[in-house]
Structure formats: C-alpha cells, structure tokens
Image (cartoon, rainbow, N blue to C red; front, side, top):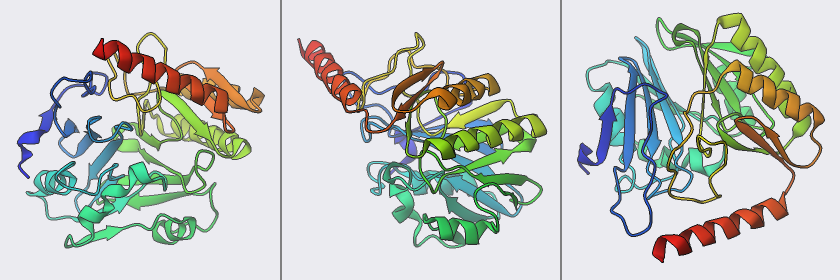
Length: 295
C-alpha cells in the first residue's frame, strides 16, 4: 500500500477534515494526517471505510512515541495506519507505545497492524491492564505521569462512556485528548455518576495545567449545531474538532440534571440509557438522506 492514499497537511486543528462523500461520488483519501507540531500529529480515518471516522493521535518524545487509538480497520489496505506511523517515525530513534482512549472496537481494530512491529508495546484494553501499564494505584482518580522523553504526559481514568476510558493531558502542547468521553456530538453514557466525576476531574486538569484544547475521538456535529445521523458517511459543514473548557462545563451541568434520554449540552449531547426512540429517528434520517442523494 502506498502513502499516496494518505492526505498530509499542516492546517490548523480548527480547519475542515476529510468529510466523506455523497453516495455515487469517488472515495477520498483513506487516512488524513495533520501535523500540529513537528512531534504531534492528528490522524483521521476515512468515512468510506468506517462511518465512525475516528481520530487518532501520535505524540512523539525523545525516547518513545504514543499512538492513542488505532481506528476501525485491521486491514492495511483499507487504512494504512502502520505504514503511515512508520513514515512519521522514520527519522526518530524511539519506541512506540500503542494505547487506547477506551476499549471499543472502533478505536482498537488497527492494533493488529502493530503486533509484529519491533520496539512496540500495545497496552491491554482491560482496566487491570491499563492500570498496570501506566502505574495506577488509585483508579480512576489518580493522575499518573507518562514521560515520552522530555515530554511528560498526564493520564487519568475517565469512566462514564466506558469503564476502561482514559484522558491524556499534554501540558507542553496545551492539549487534552478525551477519546469518546467528550467530542462534538453524541456522548453515549454507560455510567452517569462516573461521568459526572470524570467531567469534574477533567475541568480541574484543564485549569491546573492551562489546557486550552480538548480533542476527542469523533466529530458528529455540523456547524449549525445539528448532529449528523448515526452511521452517516458524509459530514458536510462539520463543526471544528477542538472543544474548550466552556464545552466541558456545559456537559458537566447537563450531566447533573440528566437521568435518562437525550440531554443537549451545547456542542455535546448526552445520550443516557438505550435511547431507542432517538436511535430509530436517526435510522429514518439516514434513510431519507440516502433516498435524496439517489433521487
């Protein structure tokens, strides 16, 4: 697989990303790589391969690099993630750690591409494995340091969406990587009480370390505030990816009054419980959109 199907750019994080395409139009790049700094890259998987279009993050220090999440495809033909990461690390003498924002399949299917990679560790996805690897003794509230070499990261447990979730803070780059705990769009809540606690601790980390950007695992929101239908493979006019402390504060406030159902919170919407009615509504929206695109 050649890297000619990978889009490399240096655009700001707020700039548009690959957005998928209407039915009948040619597929775009399989993977997008955005250089934020010379040692920091954000990757996005194509919607033509996965409607989830997950974001992945590569942070590089002087001794090791951290790849947070591996996306929704184990097949390098569909998503040349390993080749892309090897390309980005080619001039650096570092080990690679493959970790996960949480344990859901759309964030770890690409692990298989790295199982035979030299000087590479893949962090287990179970809670015990995460605790052991990063050195947690008080899960989830403890904040542990994970140094990439002249680049210390802070990691804390973040249950709520998934009991295995973590949040990664990079003080030197003023970034928080939040996975599926917070991103523009629908946050599916597994444990509301745990999520409230997680949001509160995330706010404290933002304020203690001067973090200005929260970068999540997906983007399901349009600039006008409407969310794209579940499983949509076309996101025109997508909302900017970075969220702020204000976004997180609104999500916390919404979580404190939520019990079940869909709870709007600005750029985020909490989906608490099965939400069967709203899910069926999204199925209808997606079907109607596909009919219009073929009319």
